[in-house]
Image 1 (cartoon, rainbow, N blue to C red):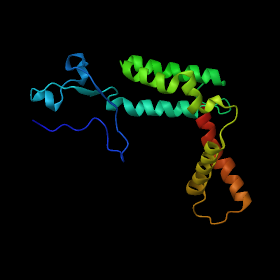
Image 2: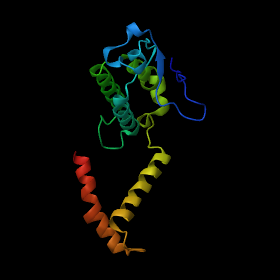
Image 3: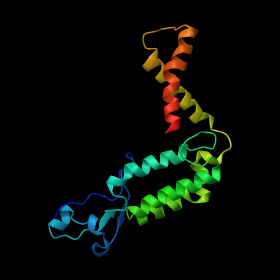
Image 4: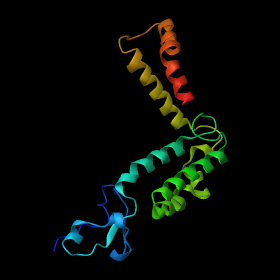
Length: 177
């Protein structure tokens, strides 16, 4: 008999997945087939979010977090419109991939109104300063790394030329997409 790993991660490490207990007979077909079942031992634990869906879900949640009425982009230019867009997008993804438990978890802990207000940037009328600082630092790092890496202290006319001719077209293309 093999030793089983604990359902929770050690206190120092963050858990990589959420594990639930379920009778082997209630598992979906795509969750079956573990090593322990191959040895004749019924499987009693499964993750409610398969690994292949974690990255797309996190990417969508990041987009939902970053959406704001003052920033052009993916969603309606109002806080309520952004929330409707985010909830509909995540719900549609979960329904298409038969992730009922994932949707229940996301709704209860992230997307219902009282939770949405705690983490979504679109709830606030202004963009938080911390995220703004990060955006600006990323913007200037890109300018320095991509366009001004040969110049220690560029003149103002060179900097203006780089911003207008080199950098602005990339942002215009990004906004049009």
